Length: 304
Image 1 (cartoon, helix red, strand yellow):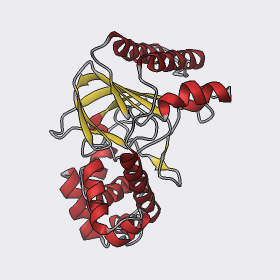
Image 2: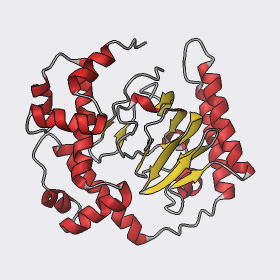
Image 3: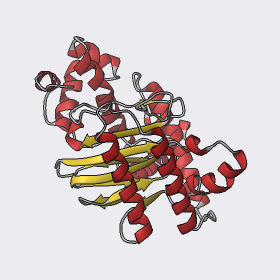
Image 4: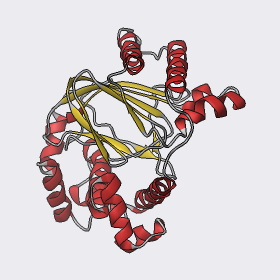
């Protein structure tokens, strides 16, 4: 639980994020994060099966869910539903401290009939890609449960997940969602198809980021034309495919940069850049510092 640590995600073959659960045998993730742990104050757009809950403790951030921007001021929160493209960032590069809890629907899958009718009716409902946890009392109650659970977790000396409390809270939250949301699907088939195509293109990029990637090859992975490919990236991720690739390669390079003695040239080629100079130029453009200076600066920060 170190807010200064860089959060480096890995991904499954379908490009869903492989969540680094606190306990690999129990699909729940609880931590306190700070936005400056990302060198550009922005995570990379990703998705996972888990429901994600964010509570803003200090400062503010913007959350992008399927291309829609949601402002999260201090004291507010958001629930991102299963399999939605999302990431948090600060366009002004301002600090934000937040609680992040991810809970896998599998925690509640003991009975197939119950799971399909009462859990998946929420988690697979495209009408609710996210829920802004402000306003109505039942939304506030979800926010308070998440905040309280983290406080209980943080107060423990062993930092072990409160397993019974987590499952109990998750079941209570799902009950609240089921009772207060219209669980009849109303999502747009067009949007579902677009997101499916976009996920396929992101998967392709994830699998080939060390190689040369063309706009044509990305579009082919999404079964669409080049202009359609660019449109979907702009609509849902608010950036071009090539910008997404550059940012992903930079994020992939951080692990080697911070946790190895590899040269800048080696890191550049391993992460798909055509050379060290272009890697340094891109790093400086997005992070405002050179890779070497960033490596030296991070080596002076104590990590626990």
